[in-house]
Length: 114
Length: 108
Picture (cartoon, rainbow over the protein chains, first blue to last red):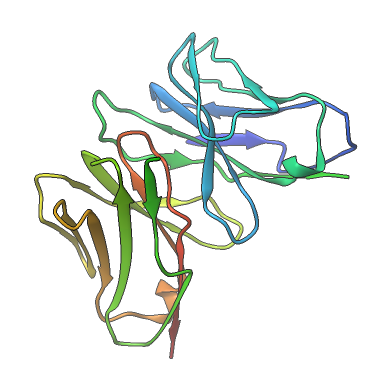
């Protein structure tokens, strides 16, 4: 199993540009998550999905969009990038039928908006 | 608002001592709490999960407690080693919201 994979590893965007951060998992997990982590800070939940076709907002969804057309993939779209979106983005997945189930994280995407 | 807080940004201890990290939650009683380790430049890695009806959970040198009266979870690393140096994060299992983390440094 590859686990959770994220692409790209690094990206520099100009203000106003758009991009999609890719996330895939091969563990057949039902839940998937996107977080951002600013330097020296904890993880902030952007969006999450409880299954294909279902997504919901987390703590900091503004400026982002997601889709979940398959169980495996959960891309994060940034429209009109702003310097405030400079951060490290982590995708995670877990299998749960209730509220248990550990999360598996990808290696992260380091994004700089200038 | 529902918060999950880790009081200490950083904790420095001597090798061999027990490290104790604190996670507090407010206005909400999670059914589960999870603890993760994060090394610089890497994604978090799961360590332990504790349910609200469990008072204590152990795994090797790690121990987690869950006190629903105090609304607090304690994470202990006994016989700490320099290799334990990392940031430790707690999370509400119900909605996977994380605290800010505590950066632990174990000095030889």
